[in-house]
Image (cartoon, rainbow, N blue to C red; front, top):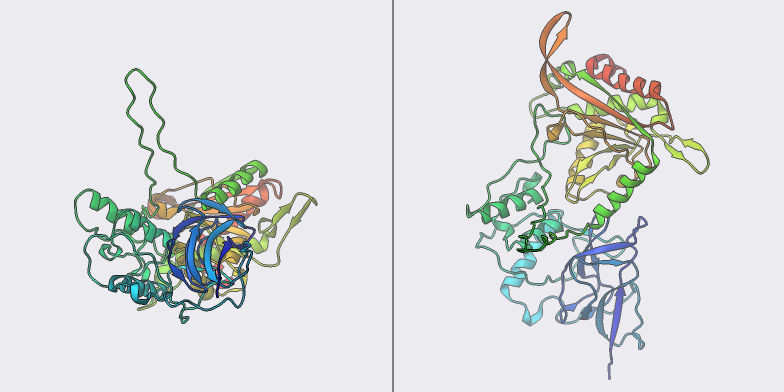
Length: 480
């Protein structure tokens, strides 16, 4: 006679030194039957959103955290009631060779057509690149794990076209707003529904205007843009103050907890401000010649390298001449550590916030290779699919805030790096050329550096090297 045993699965080590994660959403409910390697929850770490699969087959006995709750690695996540397992029911991590899937794990007789259609839609999302799977636990696109999602609350009527959603956060936003993702017109690359699309659709729905119209897509691949670029950063809703009670003080507004990503970013930025004595220099640059070079390189069906690629090439060359800026400071040993290559970080506004993934070995790439690498890194960062190595490897950061429609900034250095170069928008301005006032395409370079590793002379020389290459790009490109 078989015995029923509760196996408690602890939140596993998610790598990269992460010690906690927030439950974005449960993919199962208490009483559901699950199989080995079936995703049971989506959790958000400081790095990304990942799916956590179950190492056990059985029926869900208890969910140990609510959606939105943060739990530490090693704490109970879910209890699965299994037949025959360890008699003591000791909490455990993943187990190899766990028994197979029960008869209801693929939906069974209790599955309804609507649930099966939703499962098919989810699998279509995965084939489009939806969802990150926890390394060491996840399934492949060809596995037959028979995962089954908890039915979601119904949304407004929509057609049956497949929905491509890369970020679980997008699905959560839509679910909480009661919005059917199939009613949202996508603006992301390849027809992907983005966070901005959902927020726009929710805003339109609340205004009574019906289905949302596609909004502006992100500005290219991090390229410099003339004038003001589209604002792709969702503005968080401000706390709504409560009406004051007659004769008493006003009540406090609502509280918005920081996400795991925001807490991690806060720690890095705070440490940078606390430890690094940073200084900033800047210069206005005539980018007309570079603009014209980029336009001349365009061919039918091939836009060629973007402006950002050329600037990245100039930055890499300047770092070869001033390697102390492509370094980190070992305070304990009193040493400046200069790596043997340039891993060029790029500031990108992703689904979870601002990240700075790196083009690995950027100094060893040709212009065409660098262009392809930048486009790939930026596209995946926007979709929340940067690798842990890319997010941690940067030795120097290039920040294009021109797409936000601003001219200058004094950015915070991305600790443990020692410098960052920022670029403002490219805009036509009156400029004196050989005694004549002419319209020229001008951009501002802002350079922030750690004053412990170099003085202003070195910083100014680096900045002028990049600026001179932008103003006279042809000789610089030929040298490269």
